[in-house]
Amino acid sequence: MSWGLGEFGLDFWGVDPTLYMQSAVATTTHSVTITLSQPVRARSPISLGDALNPRTWTVTRVDNSQLFVVIGVLKVTARRFMLFLRTALSSYNRTHRVRATGLISATGILISSPYEADFRGVLPTTQINEREGPFDLKTTDIVGGGLLTTEAGGYARIYGDDVVRKMIYRRLSTMPGSYFHLATDEFGVGLKIKEVLRGSSLPALKVKIDQEILREPGVLGVTTALSLSNGVLQIKASVRTASGNTETIIEAR
Image (tube, rainbow, N blue to C red; front, side, top):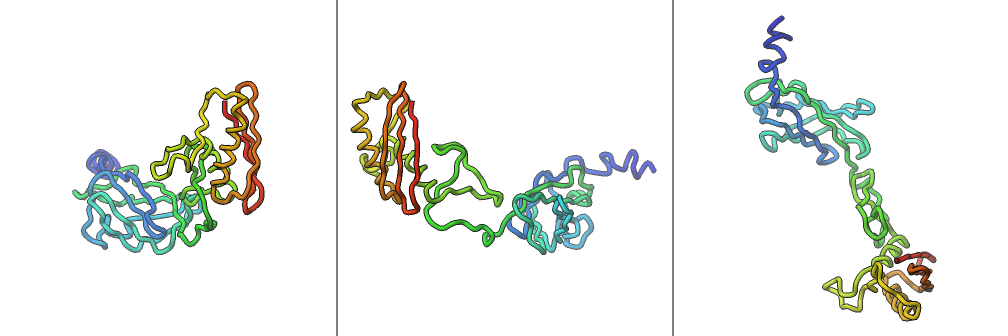
């Protein structure tokens, strides 16, 4: 059996060690794009081991082995192919797997491991139910931080009073004149970290903060209280909006 599993079977003469599957990504609900390390044979949709043959590829869902039938293959480049599926992929939080154990290279040599790749599914836009109205992107921190994503693969959003609260933080911490399209007195209070404040300056600062918060769309009224203790400025703002009252507490050292 030296020609089967031995010297000339599964070594350099049997498989191409430079040909393997690099990645897979769902491009639509019914398609997945495959990237290979080397050009492969792509001549006929009926030839055994040919990349254009739908039977060369197997697509399944990992957790329940659900099979997604490949009904067509499009050559994008010599190393990249798009597989078209009969049924829609599952959602983004489900892992899928594409395999091509019989794929052959442009010179007719069998693909080597890894001959499979995992990828996430997608959700059709009709299943992504977003609330109406003003929104902002949700972050790991109210002032900034990284953007958070949803299970569908999009960016998470915040609405209503959460947006108002975030915009108050932004207004109080932004330096006036930071936005070129706005006048200097239109946006920003300019509170600074480690800025020296005296108790005598708090009344004027309170008036400025009240005026700034009232400029925010959706704010109907505001009551603020400022206190300075041990070098820490605390701003407590009770804001009345169309949906009710929201309270924000800000501390600056």
